[in-house]
Image (cartoon, rainbow, N blue to C red):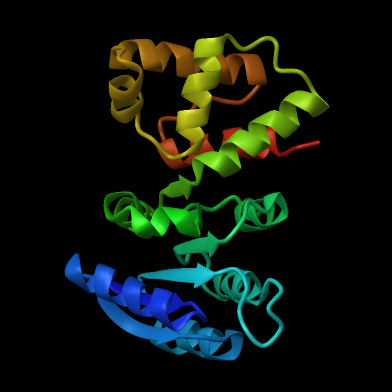
Length: 215
């Protein structure tokens, strides 16, 4: 699986390269600025891109904007964005096109190799990998904008794990319940939120995130 990495800090970029290579990923390019990232994504057509939000020369959201443009040029290009802090605007922009193959992780997650590699693989396969802190802030903001009192405490737990991109089996294991119970909670969530149920895990995650971020 070919990966393009964009990170301006040499030590972190080198660490990402070594970690991904240790898990049998092929590094197509490792760059440190926006223009080089744009060229690499256009010319090398990687299987997945791991991109820092803030890159030279602007150090604003150059990395994110390069990734979004690449997804417009090549719809569905898997992109995992890394950020120092939770920026809800960036999460919204990344999810705006409604396609899968997207992730948003805080850089702290990179130091957990299993979690990071799992996120890269999930995104590369068209899934979603959202940082738990991002989801928590979206849930909190949504609750403030429009109370979600119709959802039970357990349904909120299930929805948060769904939004992270977890499968029914993974949710069941984490909450110590059966998959049948999770399926029932999922059905109830879609019904209460007015969202059509779907057998496609990625679509259901994006639908829930779209609802949480709507307003």
